[in-house]
Length: 292
Ligand SMILES: O=C1O[C@H](COP(=O)(O)O)[C@@H](O)[C@H](O)[C@H]1O
Image (cartoon, rainbow, N blue to C red):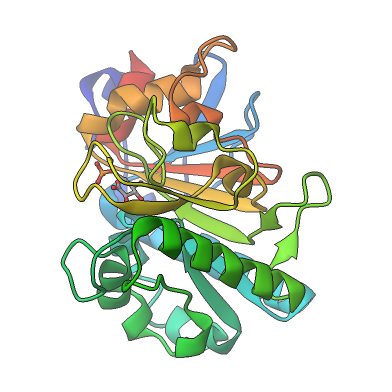
């Protein structure tokens, strides 16, 4: 049974009964592993896994739980930054065995960006994260950092940055020894079809912010227009980033991100280059251009 695109199907036949085994495919000098949990090593230090949506949720749960155990053992806490896209793929993480095995009391949750709307609004990233993930596990409410939704975007960004600074001072959040920016254990990110990541949109000044930890915009091209967002130096200080990207509408941006030439750093996603590890979790739609 070939699950994947015709181009890919010619090279690889996917056996759903053996989903923990993957066959590497050589794609323009990158080794891409399909439907598997095997770590790929690639020439640009990016780890790309192409999975069915079901396997993506399984694989992501294993990956996140392993990092949770590692950082809780090493540091006594686990700092996790969420964005909207990956939330639905955390569905296996809130089930057995992870629900019982993870020490949720040590988790600290942050949002890579937030829409400046009430937390009850359907556009609120917090609402999405809470409904789909946070409310399903016993993370202490005080360990979830949300925006002050009574403030305008600039004030909300300042207050969120102050919150991060306080948590750095109290050693909840680490600091990058290279840049001095806060260093989160894990960021679970997605991207838009235009190559935006967090609320860093192509051509917008927020992309070039080099001092602030959290900035704002009042004219985002995607509604709602008022948002706050982590800046690129914070994203790039991360110990681990999981890029969880699904849907054929993002195939071009994924291609740009993974096949970029050194002179083509125009899209925000192309500027994501963390100090730590980055791992890509793609479905066949998002990965489809990688096989042409
Ligand atoms: O607005 C946002 O969108 C992107 C994902 O793009 P989408 O087109 O798939 O909705 C996300 O990275 C960002 O966190 C979010 O606020």
